[in-house]
Length: 130
Image 1: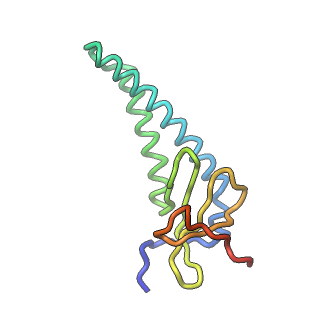
Image 2: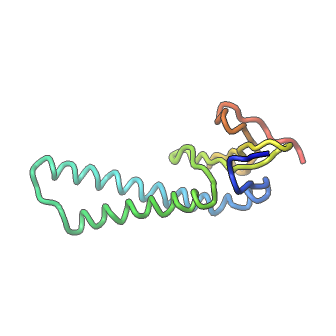
Image 3: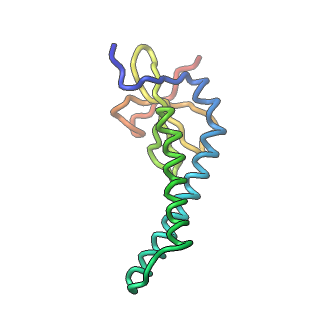
């Protein structure tokens, strides 16, 4: 059977990653928030015709690099962030021979749901009892 993903997570593997994911999502959101704030400031300065450079631009570049760093962590592990603000994350998995996503949202203590690759959050179903 051909799968879309090279890496597939067991429920236990995905659950073990929750503490790390919480940290990465927090860091990612912090960089993203700073990036938005700096982008607004740069836009205001450009609107007044100011020359830009120095610390403001350097900080903007650092925040962009920070966002990219955390997105790369997820990409390299083939874990998909579906919504950064909600902390909605999907892990490729195989259940009953089918490629699916294990679905976790940051306010959940554990991974308890899955859905087909094409149904998204609306198609979430509770994992079968082990």
